[in-house]
Length: 127
Image 1 (cartoon, one colour):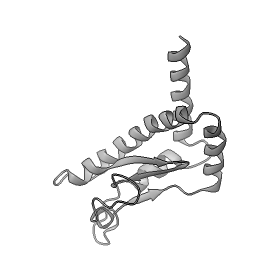
Image 2 (cartoon, rainbow, N blue to C red):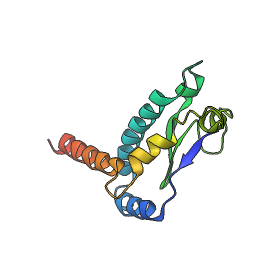
Image 3 (cartoon, rainbow, N blue to C red):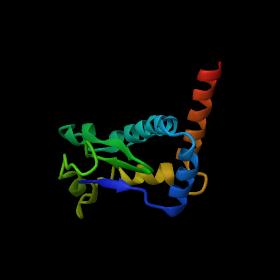
Image 4 (cartoon, helix red, strand yellow):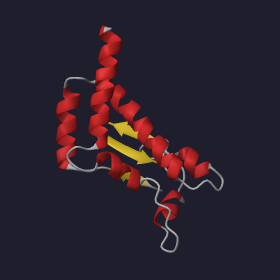
């Protein structure tokens, strides 16, 4: 089972500030960006049967987010996903590289995408 949770105090504090005043609006923005992250991870996943690829999704609970093969937090759906991702002889990492690409560094791609999504939704609402 692959359950990658970005657990950084700096990231959490940024999300806390951003999400505090926006509530469900923030969740909607993060869901849109999270769906793009999951799409990218699915494009890197093994496609032998397609079951692993099709099970990858983005979950949120409060300020915590995960790129995972679980349908919801706490429920294992594909226990072999961890083995595929971390196999010692033939690893096929499909989730962690994507997560790091989106959330790595101070000017992370995910923050830029959240800002773009916020601007797009504001134009929709005000336009």
